[in-house]
Image (cartoon, rainbow, N blue to C red; front, side, top):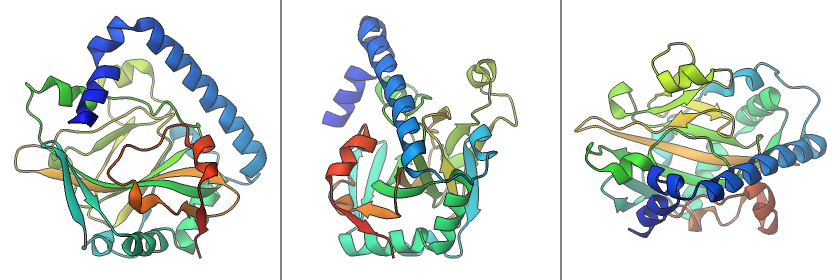
Length: 266
């Protein structure tokens, strides 16, 4: 698959070791971008009242008053390869999903803890499948990482749909987890597994929280909804979300997404 080839070329351990200067410059550039855009967003969009504790750990949870599974019954399945299936919604169902998830209660909850209103700039509903240890390429794609080419304020919303500990849930480390604990990966109390059955919403700062997709055990899979949110002057979403569900999320979205039409969430 083309997607696998791109990832293996630019994000594998081997390629990183072969092109150290390039990856150093890329890392430096994205760090400058992340910090600069965060400062601009703080000035333009951030309320003075927000929950400071969220920015100490970078993870929050909120119970939904509905079952998100009911919002994604009519999907088209696209297998990118044997490790992942994308569940694609039509435009009308995306609108219903957004209005259900980001109702006034959720908007108020997220704005209260972060200080921001948001633009929803990307949506993906995906299901991870078991990958054998011998498939190094796909295992490399699931390495622990930060989302680098994004603002520090970019928020990702995850809604696990059928995920328990055997499903290979997403593992997210708190911001204040030290380097030794993250490398060790066994220290308790410094990370969370994102598990649930369509009834729990997780908010994560992926530019600041080290995170890793798990590997489901055989005969298990992990299916979840993921939204990418960027600070805005109102709650809104990109009109073309339905066209982009099966392609990778856009990089540097704080800049790129301003050129696309948005729809206010009512």
